[in-house]
Image (cartoon, rainbow, N blue to C red; front, side, top):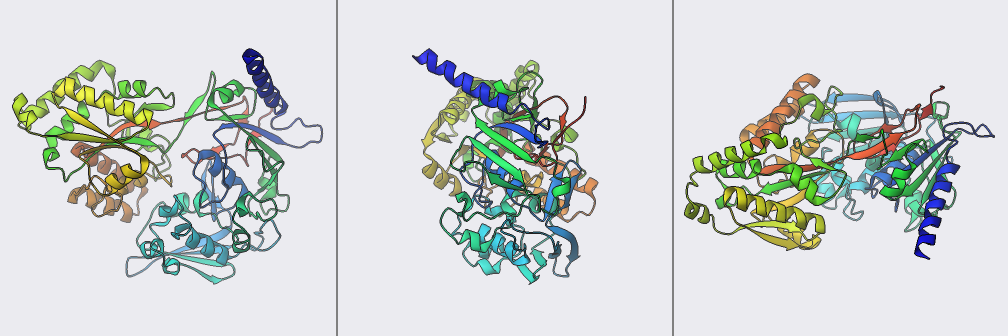
Length: 533
Protein backbone atom coordinates (compact mmCIF):
# COMPACT_ATOMS: atom_id res chain seq x y z
CA UNK A 1 0.00 0.00 0.00
CA UNK A 2 2.87 2.40 0.86
CA UNK A 3 4.49 1.88 -2.56
CA UNK A 4 1.12 2.46 -4.28
CA UNK A 5 0.65 5.76 -2.44
CA UNK A 6 4.17 6.89 -3.28
CA UNK A 7 3.64 6.08 -6.96
CA UNK A 8 0.31 7.86 -6.97
CA UNK A 9 1.84 10.97 -5.39
CA UNK A 10 4.63 11.00 -7.96
CA UNK A 11 2.12 10.58 -10.79
CA UNK A 12 0.03 13.46 -9.45
CA UNK A 13 3.10 15.73 -9.25
CA UNK A 14 4.16 14.87 -12.80
CA UNK A 15 0.64 15.36 -14.13
CA UNK A 16 0.39 18.80 -12.51
CA UNK A 17 3.78 19.74 -13.92
CA UNK A 18 2.75 18.46 -17.35
CA UNK A 19 -0.37 20.59 -17.23
CA UNK A 20 1.91 23.62 -16.99
CA UNK A 21 4.12 22.65 -19.89
CA UNK A 22 2.37 25.01 -22.28
CA UNK A 23 4.58 27.59 -20.57
CA UNK A 24 4.94 31.02 -22.11
CA UNK A 25 2.48 30.73 -24.95
CA UNK A 26 1.02 27.90 -26.96
CA UNK A 27 -2.40 28.05 -25.30
CA UNK A 28 -5.40 27.41 -27.59
CA UNK A 29 -6.98 30.64 -26.37
CA UNK A 30 -3.75 32.55 -27.05
CA UNK A 31 -3.36 33.16 -23.33
CA UNK A 32 0.29 33.65 -22.47
CA UNK A 33 1.09 31.56 -19.40
CA UNK A 34 4.14 31.24 -17.17
CA UNK A 35 4.50 28.03 -15.18
CA UNK A 36 6.47 28.17 -11.93
CA UNK A 37 7.29 25.57 -9.30
CA UNK A 38 8.61 27.07 -6.06
CA UNK A 39 9.63 25.62 -2.73
CA UNK A 40 7.99 26.85 0.45
CA UNK A 41 4.50 28.26 0.67
CA UNK A 42 2.34 31.31 1.25
CA UNK A 43 0.55 31.92 4.53
CA UNK A 44 0.03 35.66 4.00
CA UNK A 45 0.26 38.25 1.23
CA UNK A 46 0.10 41.17 3.67
CA UNK A 47 3.20 43.22 2.70
CA UNK A 48 3.99 44.05 6.33
CA UNK A 49 3.96 40.40 7.38
CA UNK A 50 5.28 38.56 4.31
CA UNK A 51 8.70 37.07 5.11
CA UNK A 52 9.35 33.95 3.04
CA UNK A 53 10.60 34.10 -0.57
CA UNK A 54 7.26 32.68 -1.73
CA UNK A 55 5.24 35.26 0.21
CA UNK A 56 7.36 38.15 -0.98
CA UNK A 57 7.13 36.86 -4.54
CA UNK A 58 3.33 36.94 -4.30
CA UNK A 59 3.41 40.50 -2.91
CA UNK A 60 5.59 41.70 -5.81
CA UNK A 61 2.81 40.71 -8.23
CA UNK A 62 -0.27 41.75 -6.25
CA UNK A 63 0.99 45.21 -5.27
CA UNK A 64 2.86 48.10 -6.87
CA UNK A 65 5.47 50.07 -4.95
CA UNK A 66 6.83 53.51 -5.80
CA UNK A 67 9.44 51.80 -8.01
CA UNK A 68 9.85 48.30 -9.44
CA UNK A 69 13.04 46.31 -9.91
CA UNK A 70 13.94 45.20 -13.43
CA UNK A 71 17.05 43.73 -15.02
CA UNK A 72 18.16 47.32 -15.59
CA UNK A 73 17.54 48.49 -12.04
CA UNK A 74 14.66 50.39 -10.44
CA UNK A 75 12.05 51.93 -12.76
CA UNK A 76 9.03 54.10 -12.11
CA UNK A 77 5.94 52.28 -10.87
CA UNK A 78 3.29 53.96 -8.69
CA UNK A 79 5.53 57.03 -8.58
CA UNK A 80 5.73 58.81 -11.91
CA UNK A 81 8.57 61.07 -10.76
CA UNK A 82 10.63 61.98 -7.70
CA UNK A 83 12.66 64.93 -6.47
CA UNK A 84 15.37 64.69 -3.81
CA UNK A 85 16.42 67.61 -1.62
CA UNK A 86 19.35 67.82 0.80
CA UNK A 87 18.39 69.86 3.85
CA UNK A 88 20.61 72.11 5.96
CA UNK A 89 20.13 69.93 9.05
CA UNK A 90 21.54 66.88 7.28
CA UNK A 91 18.17 65.30 6.54
CA UNK A 92 16.97 64.45 3.05
CA UNK A 93 13.51 64.92 1.59
CA UNK A 94 12.08 62.79 -1.21
CA UNK A 95 8.96 64.07 -2.93
CA UNK A 96 7.14 61.42 -4.98
CA UNK A 97 4.50 62.38 -7.52
CA UNK A 98 2.10 59.48 -8.00
CA UNK A 99 0.74 58.66 -11.43
CA UNK A 100 -2.85 59.69 -12.03
CA UNK A 101 -3.82 56.32 -13.55
CA UNK A 102 -2.72 54.13 -10.62
CA UNK A 103 -5.75 52.23 -9.33
CA UNK A 104 -6.64 49.73 -6.65
CA UNK A 105 -8.31 46.55 -7.82
CA UNK A 106 -11.66 47.95 -6.61
CA UNK A 107 -11.28 50.84 -9.07
CA UNK A 108 -10.42 53.58 -6.58
CA UNK A 109 -7.34 55.76 -7.02
CA UNK A 110 -4.05 54.99 -5.29
CA UNK A 111 -3.26 58.07 -3.19
CA UNK A 112 -0.37 59.43 -1.18
CA UNK A 113 -2.38 58.79 1.96
CA UNK A 114 -2.32 55.04 1.11
CA UNK A 115 1.48 55.12 1.35
CA UNK A 116 1.40 57.17 4.56
CA UNK A 117 -0.99 54.67 6.12
CA UNK A 118 1.01 51.64 4.94
CA UNK A 119 4.39 52.93 6.14
CA UNK A 120 3.04 54.00 9.54
CA UNK A 121 1.31 50.63 9.87
CA UNK A 122 4.54 48.82 8.96
CA UNK A 123 6.51 50.35 11.86
CA UNK A 124 3.67 50.35 14.40
CA UNK A 125 4.28 47.94 17.29
CA UNK A 126 0.63 46.88 16.96
CA UNK A 127 1.43 45.38 13.57
CA UNK A 128 4.44 43.52 14.99
CA UNK A 129 6.00 43.38 11.55
CA UNK A 130 9.32 41.54 11.29
CA UNK A 131 10.06 43.91 8.39
CA UNK A 132 9.61 47.19 10.26
CA UNK A 133 13.30 48.14 10.44
CA UNK A 134 13.47 48.50 6.66
CA UNK A 135 12.26 52.06 7.35
CA UNK A 136 14.85 52.78 10.04
CA UNK A 137 16.39 55.55 7.90
CA UNK A 138 13.13 57.54 7.91
CA UNK A 139 13.10 60.46 10.34
CA UNK A 140 11.16 59.66 13.51
CA UNK A 141 11.46 55.90 13.08
CA UNK A 142 12.48 55.19 16.70
CA UNK A 143 9.51 57.11 18.12
CA UNK A 144 7.13 55.52 15.62
CA UNK A 145 8.43 52.04 16.44
CA UNK A 146 7.83 52.84 20.12
CA UNK A 147 4.17 53.59 19.44
CA UNK A 148 3.90 57.16 18.12
CA UNK A 149 3.17 56.29 14.48
CA UNK A 150 2.58 59.92 13.48
CA UNK A 151 6.22 60.69 14.35
CA UNK A 152 7.36 58.85 11.21
CA UNK A 153 8.62 61.33 8.60
CA UNK A 154 6.00 60.65 5.93
CA UNK A 155 3.24 62.94 4.72
CA UNK A 156 0.61 63.32 2.01
CA UNK A 157 1.00 66.82 0.63
CA UNK A 158 -2.01 66.20 -1.57
CA UNK A 159 -3.67 63.13 -3.12
CA UNK A 160 -0.80 62.52 -5.51
CA UNK A 161 2.21 63.88 -3.58
CA UNK A 162 3.93 61.60 -1.07
CA UNK A 163 6.76 63.18 0.95
CA UNK A 164 9.38 61.24 2.91
CA UNK A 165 12.04 62.79 5.14
CA UNK A 166 15.12 60.70 5.94
CA UNK A 167 17.16 61.35 9.07
CA UNK A 168 20.36 61.22 6.95
CA UNK A 169 21.52 60.37 3.46
CA UNK A 170 20.60 56.85 2.42
CA UNK A 171 22.10 55.88 -0.97
CA UNK A 172 20.02 52.70 -1.32
CA UNK A 173 16.66 54.23 -0.39
CA UNK A 174 15.13 54.45 -3.87
CA UNK A 175 16.46 51.24 -5.38
CA UNK A 176 16.19 48.94 -2.36
CA UNK A 177 13.59 50.37 0.05
CA UNK A 178 11.10 51.86 -2.41
CA UNK A 179 10.98 48.61 -4.41
CA UNK A 180 10.69 46.20 -1.46
CA UNK A 181 7.64 44.01 -0.79
CA UNK A 182 7.44 45.28 2.81
CA UNK A 183 6.94 48.95 1.83
CA UNK A 184 4.10 48.35 -0.63
CA UNK A 185 1.02 50.55 -0.15
CA UNK A 186 -2.09 49.03 1.39
CA UNK A 187 -5.63 50.38 1.40
CA UNK A 188 -6.92 51.37 4.84
CA UNK A 189 -10.50 50.29 4.08
CA UNK A 190 -9.34 46.82 3.05
CA UNK A 191 -6.97 46.34 5.99
CA UNK A 192 -9.54 47.47 8.52
CA UNK A 193 -12.34 45.37 7.01
CA UNK A 194 -11.48 42.27 9.02
CA UNK A 195 -8.77 40.21 10.69
CA UNK A 196 -7.74 38.29 7.56
CA UNK A 197 -8.20 40.93 4.89
CA UNK A 198 -5.18 39.67 2.92
CA UNK A 199 -6.62 36.15 2.72
CA UNK A 200 -10.19 37.17 1.92
CA UNK A 201 -11.47 37.12 -1.64
CA UNK A 202 -14.14 39.60 -0.51
CA UNK A 203 -11.94 42.16 1.22
CA UNK A 204 -8.56 41.88 -0.46
CA UNK A 205 -7.56 44.91 -2.52
CA UNK A 206 -4.24 45.23 -4.36
CA UNK A 207 -2.79 47.73 -6.80
CA UNK A 208 -0.40 45.46 -8.67
CA UNK A 209 -0.26 44.22 -12.26
CA UNK A 210 -1.83 40.88 -11.25
CA UNK A 211 -4.83 39.74 -9.24
CA UNK A 212 -5.26 36.49 -7.39
CA UNK A 213 -7.59 33.95 -8.98
CA UNK A 214 -8.42 30.28 -8.51
CA UNK A 215 -9.05 28.60 -5.17
CA UNK A 216 -7.72 30.90 -2.43
CA UNK A 217 -7.96 28.06 0.10
CA UNK A 218 -5.57 25.83 -1.85
CA UNK A 219 -2.17 26.38 -0.22
CA UNK A 220 -0.41 24.37 -2.93
CA UNK A 221 -1.06 26.70 -5.85
CA UNK A 222 -1.16 30.45 -6.47
CA UNK A 223 -2.88 31.63 -9.64
CA UNK A 224 -2.10 35.18 -10.78
CA UNK A 225 -4.05 36.79 -13.62
CA UNK A 226 -3.04 40.02 -15.36
CA UNK A 227 -5.04 43.12 -14.50
CA UNK A 228 -5.94 44.33 -17.98
CA UNK A 229 -6.79 47.81 -16.71
CA UNK A 230 -3.45 48.23 -14.91
CA UNK A 231 -1.50 51.25 -16.17
CA UNK A 232 1.40 48.98 -17.17
CA UNK A 233 -0.69 46.17 -18.66
CA UNK A 234 0.81 46.57 -22.15
CA UNK A 235 4.29 45.85 -20.82
CA UNK A 236 3.13 43.04 -18.53
CA UNK A 237 3.70 40.01 -20.74
CA UNK A 238 2.06 36.95 -19.13
CA UNK A 239 -1.72 36.77 -18.97
CA UNK A 240 -1.51 34.13 -16.28
CA UNK A 241 1.15 32.90 -13.86
CA UNK A 242 0.64 29.56 -12.14
CA UNK A 243 2.90 28.96 -9.12
CA UNK A 244 2.92 25.49 -7.59
CA UNK A 245 4.42 25.16 -4.11
CA UNK A 246 6.33 21.92 -3.66
CA UNK A 247 9.00 20.29 -1.54
CA UNK A 248 12.60 20.62 -2.64
CA UNK A 249 12.63 17.05 -3.99
CA UNK A 250 9.40 17.54 -5.94
CA UNK A 251 10.54 20.90 -7.31
CA UNK A 252 13.82 19.39 -8.49
CA UNK A 253 11.86 16.77 -10.47
CA UNK A 254 9.95 19.57 -12.22
CA UNK A 255 13.15 21.32 -13.37
CA UNK A 256 13.20 21.45 -17.15
CA UNK A 257 9.51 20.50 -17.36
CA UNK A 258 8.12 23.92 -16.42
CA UNK A 259 9.19 27.46 -17.27
CA UNK A 260 10.80 28.31 -13.94
CA UNK A 261 11.78 26.37 -10.83
CA UNK A 262 12.77 28.35 -7.71
CA UNK A 263 14.37 26.74 -4.67
CA UNK A 264 15.60 23.62 -6.47
CA UNK A 265 17.30 22.70 -9.71
CA UNK A 266 18.28 19.79 -11.87
CA UNK A 267 21.15 19.45 -14.29
CA UNK A 268 22.06 22.86 -15.67
CA UNK A 269 20.57 24.72 -12.70
CA UNK A 270 21.94 27.96 -11.29
CA UNK A 271 22.32 29.54 -7.86
CA UNK A 272 20.83 32.87 -6.88
CA UNK A 273 21.07 35.18 -3.90
CA UNK A 274 19.73 34.44 -0.44
CA UNK A 275 20.04 36.96 2.41
CA UNK A 276 20.92 34.46 5.16
CA UNK A 277 24.41 34.41 6.67
CA UNK A 278 25.34 32.25 9.65
CA UNK A 279 27.76 33.99 12.02
CA UNK A 280 29.65 33.48 15.24
CA UNK A 281 29.45 36.51 17.53
CA UNK A 282 32.21 37.16 20.06
CA UNK A 283 31.08 39.55 22.77
CA UNK A 284 33.54 42.43 22.92
CA UNK A 285 32.56 43.03 26.55
CA UNK A 286 33.67 39.51 27.56
CA UNK A 287 37.04 40.11 29.21
CA UNK A 288 38.38 36.64 28.37
CA UNK A 289 37.86 37.39 24.66
CA UNK A 290 39.43 40.84 24.56
CA UNK A 291 42.71 39.87 22.86
CA UNK A 292 42.58 40.26 19.07
CA UNK A 293 44.92 37.34 18.44
CA UNK A 294 42.67 34.96 20.37
CA UNK A 295 39.58 35.87 18.36
CA UNK A 296 41.47 35.74 15.07
CA UNK A 297 42.92 32.32 15.95
CA UNK A 298 39.45 30.95 16.71
CA UNK A 299 38.22 32.21 13.35
CA UNK A 300 41.18 30.82 11.39
CA UNK A 301 40.82 27.37 12.97
CA UNK A 302 37.29 26.92 11.60
CA UNK A 303 37.00 24.62 8.60
CA UNK A 304 33.91 26.14 7.01
CA UNK A 305 33.64 23.44 4.36
CA UNK A 306 33.50 20.83 7.14
CA UNK A 307 30.91 22.96 8.97
CA UNK A 308 28.63 23.05 5.93
CA UNK A 309 29.07 19.33 5.35
CA UNK A 310 28.19 18.54 8.95
CA UNK A 311 25.03 20.64 8.79
CA UNK A 312 23.85 18.49 5.85
CA UNK A 313 21.95 21.26 4.06
CA UNK A 314 22.51 21.30 0.32
CA UNK A 315 21.72 25.02 0.05
CA UNK A 316 24.53 26.09 2.40
CA UNK A 317 27.97 27.20 1.21
CA UNK A 318 31.08 28.23 3.17
CA UNK A 319 31.03 31.97 3.86
CA UNK A 320 33.41 34.01 1.70
CA UNK A 321 32.69 37.21 3.62
CA UNK A 322 29.98 38.84 5.70
CA UNK A 323 28.18 40.19 2.62
CA UNK A 324 26.78 37.22 0.67
CA UNK A 325 26.37 36.63 -3.04
CA UNK A 326 23.38 38.38 -4.64
CA UNK A 327 23.90 41.73 -2.90
CA UNK A 328 24.43 44.57 -5.36
CA UNK A 329 27.12 47.21 -5.28
CA UNK A 330 26.21 50.86 -5.81
CA UNK A 331 27.60 50.50 -9.33
CA UNK A 332 25.29 47.55 -10.04
CA UNK A 333 27.65 44.57 -9.72
CA UNK A 334 27.54 41.66 -7.29
CA UNK A 335 29.38 42.81 -4.14
CA UNK A 336 30.93 39.41 -3.46
CA UNK A 337 31.99 38.82 -7.05
CA UNK A 338 33.39 42.33 -7.44
CA UNK A 339 35.39 42.25 -4.20
CA UNK A 340 36.22 38.55 -4.11
CA UNK A 341 36.43 36.25 -1.13
CA UNK A 342 37.89 37.70 2.07
CA UNK A 343 37.80 34.30 3.81
CA UNK A 344 40.02 31.44 2.63
CA UNK A 345 38.05 28.19 2.34
CA UNK A 346 40.58 26.28 0.25
CA UNK A 347 40.90 22.78 1.80
CA UNK A 348 44.49 22.58 0.59
CA UNK A 349 45.49 25.48 2.84
CA UNK A 350 43.50 24.48 5.95
CA UNK A 351 46.49 23.02 7.81
CA UNK A 352 48.45 26.16 7.02
CA UNK A 353 45.64 28.25 8.49
CA UNK A 354 45.63 26.10 11.62
CA UNK A 355 49.36 26.69 12.03
CA UNK A 356 48.80 30.43 11.61
CA UNK A 357 46.04 30.25 14.25
CA UNK A 358 48.41 28.53 16.71
CA UNK A 359 51.02 31.24 16.08
CA UNK A 360 48.47 34.01 16.71
CA UNK A 361 47.43 32.29 19.93
CA UNK A 362 51.04 32.20 21.17
CA UNK A 363 51.60 35.85 20.17
CA UNK A 364 48.50 36.76 22.18
CA UNK A 365 50.21 35.32 25.26
CA UNK A 366 48.63 31.87 25.35
CA UNK A 367 51.91 29.97 25.31
CA UNK A 368 51.10 27.12 27.70
CA UNK A 369 48.02 24.98 28.48
CA UNK A 370 47.69 26.52 31.93
CA UNK A 371 47.52 30.00 30.37
CA UNK A 372 44.77 28.83 28.02
CA UNK A 373 43.00 27.35 31.03
CA UNK A 374 43.08 30.80 32.62
CA UNK A 375 40.39 31.86 30.13
CA UNK A 376 37.94 30.20 32.50
CA UNK A 377 34.60 28.99 31.23
CA UNK A 378 34.08 29.89 27.59
CA UNK A 379 30.43 29.33 26.72
CA UNK A 380 28.95 29.06 23.22
CA UNK A 381 25.29 30.02 23.14
CA UNK A 382 23.16 28.46 20.39
CA UNK A 383 19.56 27.76 19.48
CA UNK A 384 18.34 24.28 20.36
CA UNK A 385 17.66 23.28 16.75
CA UNK A 386 19.31 20.20 15.20
CA UNK A 387 21.31 22.28 12.71
CA UNK A 388 22.61 24.79 15.26
CA UNK A 389 23.39 22.03 17.76
CA UNK A 390 25.42 20.20 15.10
CA UNK A 391 27.26 23.41 14.26
CA UNK A 392 28.04 24.14 17.93
CA UNK A 393 29.46 20.66 18.47
CA UNK A 394 31.58 20.97 15.34
CA UNK A 395 33.13 24.23 16.56
CA UNK A 396 33.61 22.88 20.07
CA UNK A 397 35.62 19.98 18.72
CA UNK A 398 37.77 21.99 16.30
CA UNK A 399 38.75 24.56 18.96
CA UNK A 400 39.66 21.81 21.42
CA UNK A 401 41.62 19.75 18.91
CA UNK A 402 43.35 22.64 17.12
CA UNK A 403 43.88 25.28 19.81
CA UNK A 404 43.41 23.43 23.09
CA UNK A 405 40.49 25.70 24.03
CA UNK A 406 37.62 24.00 25.85
CA UNK A 407 34.22 25.49 25.12
CA UNK A 408 31.01 24.75 27.02
CA UNK A 409 27.82 24.59 24.95
CA UNK A 410 24.67 26.39 26.10
CA UNK A 411 21.46 25.43 24.28
CA UNK A 412 18.40 27.68 24.47
CA UNK A 413 14.95 27.79 22.92
CA UNK A 414 14.04 30.71 20.66
CA UNK A 415 12.65 32.97 23.38
CA UNK A 416 15.50 32.41 25.85
CA UNK A 417 18.11 32.71 23.10
CA UNK A 418 16.76 36.09 22.00
CA UNK A 419 16.72 37.36 25.57
CA UNK A 420 20.32 36.34 26.19
CA UNK A 421 21.55 37.62 22.83
CA UNK A 422 19.77 40.98 23.03
CA UNK A 423 20.91 41.43 26.62
CA UNK A 424 24.54 40.73 25.75
CA UNK A 425 24.59 37.81 28.21
CA UNK A 426 26.93 35.56 26.26
CA UNK A 427 30.59 35.06 25.47
CA UNK A 428 30.19 33.33 22.11
CA UNK A 429 26.92 32.99 20.21
CA UNK A 430 25.76 31.38 16.99
CA UNK A 431 23.07 33.19 15.05
CA UNK A 432 21.95 34.08 11.56
CA UNK A 433 21.62 37.54 10.09
CA UNK A 434 19.56 38.51 7.09
CA UNK A 435 18.71 41.59 5.04
CA UNK A 436 15.45 43.39 4.38
CA UNK A 437 16.93 45.33 1.47
CA UNK A 438 19.54 44.60 -1.18
CA UNK A 439 22.60 46.59 -0.18
CA UNK A 440 25.86 45.73 1.57
CA UNK A 441 24.99 48.23 4.29
CA UNK A 442 22.27 45.82 5.45
CA UNK A 443 25.05 43.53 6.71
CA UNK A 444 27.47 46.24 7.86
CA UNK A 445 25.42 49.04 9.45
CA UNK A 446 24.35 46.93 12.43
CA UNK A 447 27.91 46.77 13.81
CA UNK A 448 28.28 50.51 14.23
CA UNK A 449 28.68 51.78 17.80
CA UNK A 450 25.33 52.27 19.46
CA UNK A 451 23.29 50.33 16.90
CA UNK A 452 20.54 48.37 18.66
CA UNK A 453 21.42 45.25 16.64
CA UNK A 454 25.11 45.36 17.56
CA UNK A 455 24.78 42.36 19.87
CA UNK A 456 28.56 41.74 19.82
CA UNK A 457 28.89 45.25 21.34
CA UNK A 458 31.60 46.22 18.87
CA UNK A 459 33.00 49.72 19.16
CA UNK A 460 35.56 50.79 16.56
CA UNK A 461 35.95 54.46 15.68
CA UNK A 462 37.61 53.68 12.36
CA UNK A 463 34.72 51.40 11.39
CA UNK A 464 32.11 53.98 12.38
CA UNK A 465 33.88 56.61 10.30
CA UNK A 466 34.01 54.35 7.23
CA UNK A 467 30.29 53.65 7.47
CA UNK A 468 29.43 57.34 7.90
CA UNK A 469 31.59 58.34 4.96
CA UNK A 470 30.07 55.58 2.83
CA UNK A 471 26.55 56.78 3.62
CA UNK A 472 27.42 60.39 2.78
CA UNK A 473 29.34 59.59 -0.42
CA UNK A 474 27.92 60.95 -3.67
CA UNK A 475 30.18 58.69 -5.74
CA UNK A 476 29.04 55.11 -6.30
CA UNK A 477 32.62 54.00 -6.86
CA UNK A 478 33.81 55.62 -3.64
CA UNK A 479 30.90 54.24 -1.62
CA UNK A 480 31.61 50.71 -2.82
CA UNK A 481 35.28 51.12 -1.86
CA UNK A 482 34.38 52.36 1.65
CA UNK A 483 32.01 49.43 2.23
CA UNK A 484 34.66 46.99 1.03
CA UNK A 485 37.15 48.47 3.50
CA UNK A 486 34.55 48.40 6.29
CA UNK A 487 33.89 44.69 5.77
CA UNK A 488 37.61 43.96 5.81
CA UNK A 489 38.17 45.97 8.99
CA UNK A 490 35.25 44.27 10.74
CA UNK A 491 36.44 40.77 9.90
CA UNK A 492 40.03 41.59 10.83
CA UNK A 493 38.82 42.27 14.37
CA UNK A 494 37.05 38.88 14.41
CA UNK A 495 34.18 39.93 16.66
CA UNK A 496 31.82 38.84 13.89
CA UNK A 497 32.93 35.60 12.24
CA UNK A 498 30.96 34.56 9.11
CA UNK A 499 30.51 30.79 8.89
CA UNK A 500 28.16 29.97 6.05
CA UNK A 501 25.83 31.50 3.53
CA UNK A 502 22.70 30.19 1.91
CA UNK A 503 22.10 30.06 -1.83
CA UNK A 504 18.84 29.73 -3.73
CA UNK A 505 19.00 27.18 -6.55
CA UNK A 506 16.80 27.89 -9.56
CA UNK A 507 16.36 26.76 -13.14
CA UNK A 508 14.82 28.36 -16.23
CA UNK A 509 13.55 26.31 -19.14
CA UNK A 510 15.38 26.71 -22.40
CA UNK A 511 14.72 30.07 -24.06
CA UNK A 512 12.81 31.48 -21.04
CA UNK A 513 14.07 34.93 -20.04
CA UNK A 514 12.89 37.98 -18.12
CA UNK A 515 12.36 36.59 -14.61
CA UNK A 516 13.82 39.09 -12.14
CA UNK A 517 15.18 38.25 -8.67
CA UNK A 518 15.51 40.85 -5.94
CA UNK A 519 18.70 39.08 -4.83
CA UNK A 520 17.01 38.16 -1.54
CA UNK A 521 14.97 35.18 -2.73
CA UNK A 522 11.84 36.86 -4.14
CA UNK A 523 11.07 36.92 -7.88
CA UNK A 524 8.95 38.92 -10.33
CA UNK A 525 7.67 37.21 -13.48
CA UNK A 526 5.77 40.08 -15.11
CA UNK A 527 8.42 40.43 -17.85
CA UNK A 528 9.01 36.70 -18.37
CA UNK A 529 8.88 35.53 -21.96
CA UNK A 530 10.01 32.73 -24.23
CA UNK A 531 12.36 33.45 -27.11
CA UNK A 532 11.48 31.93 -30.45
CA UNK A 533 13.73 29.02 -31.40
